[in-house]
Length: 112
Image (cartoon, rainbow, N blue to C red; front, side, top):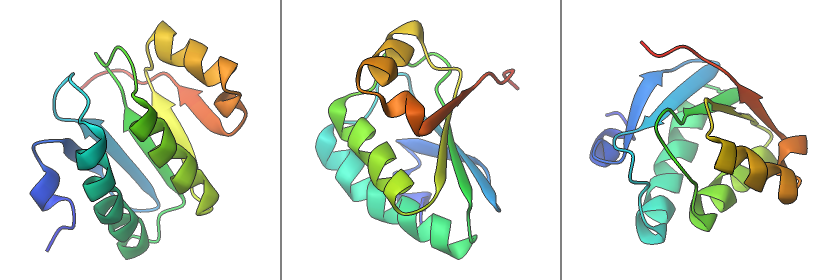
């Protein structure tokens, strides 16, 4: 069973393998409680695929709540390279101010 299946209303898995790409199912980022629940499934997915890089496609996502930032940091601390595709200018600024841009890579990726 896909560990992310029960979170399909929150996150879509676009690609799996050494590189996992996830995208939020809607432009409204889930609340903290849902992120905590989802975190365990993401970790399970990482372990299942021996993931080295996890990327979040943020097309259309205006901001990231602190719960998501915490999730990104926890994944980085697990030894997985974290990338953000297409972050908004606001997200880029938050990453710079918090110095998370030193550990989280920003990439541009075309939609579709």
